[in-house]
Image (tube, rainbow, N blue to C red):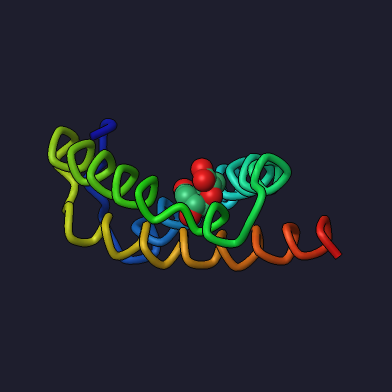
Length: 99
Ligand SMILES: C=C(O[C@@H]1C=C(C(=O)O)C=C[C@H]1O)C(=O)O
């Protein structure tokens, strides 16, 4: 985990959360850009979904959470929701590419 500060009140806690959200949204935009490119390399909808890759990603981020004193269960839930949304977006791109 990165260095964390002890806050004096809820407002200070929320300032940190707002700052972190800015970073998360920027990172999601960057990730989304690569997911969009992934669609261009896939031939069908099963390849877009790539369940084996999803399994690998989930295992990897759970391990990373454990190493960084995060909560693997929370990380897995967040990732499953995020990947589902990215698959939906990638599916749109795939369908546009293939008529
Ligand atoms: C980006 C990909 O496509 C999909 C999205 C994934 C993701 O957001 O991590 C992982 C696998 C696929 O379901 C990929 O195959 O790598």
